[in-house]
Length: 116
Image 1 (cartoon, one colour):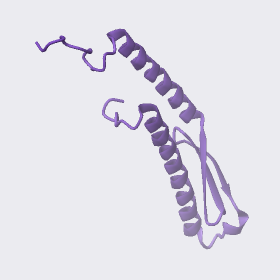
Image 2 (cartoon, helix red, strand yellow; image 1 turned 30 degrees about the horizontal axis):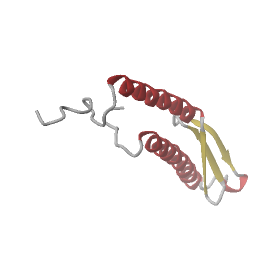
Image 3 (cartoon, helix red, strand yellow; image 1 turned 90 degrees about the horizontal axis):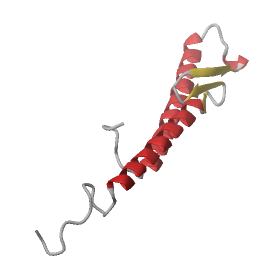
Image 4 (spheres, one colour; image 1 turned 180 degrees about the vertical axis):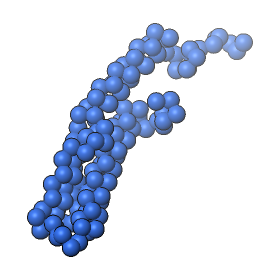
């Protein structure tokens, strides 16, 4: 063994097992709190210059859909469907981006996708 002996625990850095467990527990608590906040958050997006507005939850459930009378043309329902899809998809993307950003803040940029 090298002079001075072995330093640090299994994760190095000199943290005791108790400190590591406390740190892991704190991260888990923060993760659970963040997940709850994300589930309760609402994300909105518009399409067609604001003609269609979709609002989704952090759990990707469609909560509200607002459609302007100006785009309600019975002869062109395909355009309306496209506007609805665009608004809903963008709102869901906003929810996913917010979840990723919050997860990155919580983990300090570490990729823990395989662990969580």
